Amino acid sequence: MWGTVWSLADQLGVVARSPTELAEALARDPRRTVIVLPDLHEAKVAELVLDLARVGHTRLIVESRTTSDAYQCLAGSGCAELDLDLEQWRDQERFQHWQASLSEETRGTAASEQGEDVELSDAVAVCQANAWTVTAAYEKDQGGEHGGLRAAWLRAGQALCREPAPESRALILLSALGDGADPRYAPALKELADAAAWGLEWSRVRGDMTPPWPGPVTALATGRGPLAGYLLMAGSSSVRTVRSADATARGRVALSWDRPMAMAASAEGTVLCLDGYGHLQLESTWAVRPESSGIAGLLDDSPTSAQRLADMLRGQRGTSLAYAEGVDLGTVAVGDGTGAVRAFGDITDSVSLHEGPVTALAALSLPIGDEGAMTPLVYSGGQDGTVRVWAPGSKPMDGTLMRRSCPVVAMDAAWTASGPTAVVAWADGLVEWINWETGKQQTFRPGPPVRAVALEPGGRVFIGMDEALTCLVLRQ
Image (cartoon, rainbow, N blue to C red; front, side, top):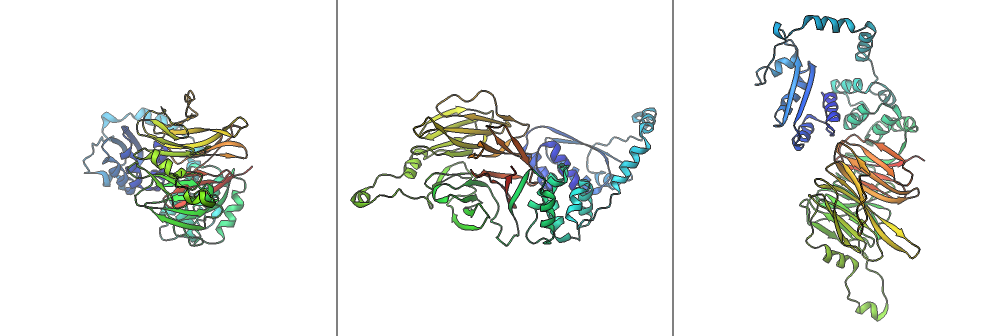
């Protein structure tokens, strides 16, 4: 059943690790969907069919033999049944012609693949074997954990089944492997993954103890100013800081609002958040006031940059958020449900960029001339599956930078050693790294749904999920 769920999720452009997640993904997607499942045998997959059939705008066409467990499960469920044993639905001549077209070699290859024997406690072997065969074997062997290998495979299985290269599978499996797994697995997977485009710096998954898993992620941001070198992680009701080098915890601040869904850090350490209702909130726990001395310092009661920014943003609501440093306040970009992006701070402007909600924003400061002037550059991702770029104060660039058939779910951008770079996460689980100056692109699929991404100027890419936080670096 797991293989069926992952295959359907791939075709529908979503990430789903279970029948429940697949049904929820279909329920959120307003498009009318028709799913065809030929030659269905297993009762578990038939139960999946019944779960999906409860989604109002989804229709399923299922082929099953009357002697199968699947048919017994579906019989009497209220579905319409077409009996192909009746003569009016049979074309014996066409069936015989199709059967004769199948060569013995084709039948033998299919049989050998189905009968492939894989050592499920060998980390390298499962990466080199047929991924669907490994999935079926792990599903059948429910009593054996295989030193943590089975749990890691099922956590990242949709990506593992989609990725054909053993070295890339090894990287995915390594990133999903908890620190409670058999200690022999990580070195073996690292050696196989050395040929992959990405290198794994570290990964923390649910249940890890050294250091502890920092919790589920709803938003990520790289720290600036007093938070430089740290990664900000938003959860259900708090913001946590961890060292970006190794995920060691530094601190945690409880929030007075719930479910932060977007986050950015300003130059002096103020953290900007969008709460679950879209209200823009500021957290100043880590903010530092510019130093001043003497009587002037004692008498200086002028508002700080954070206070001025808070006054400007008071009452604003949105669906996405980004911040770019500037000569004074910097620029805060806020996207909304209509497809518009508004800029506040050093530059005030607005523009419509998408058809439907803005789902993710990222921003860079672009140097202008030799006098230290800067202008913000905003990258915008939408529910419409496009990424666009806009410099507040100017017209948006014509056309799109990227376009796919699924929504953008998260973005970040930074100036790296190779120039302006962005990371884009999509609803189907794909994470893309793009250098706009060189045109180089690289992708990674962690397996679980991606909730947030962040990018450091040093090149580290952070991927936040419900049960894992992963740090990757692109190999030069």
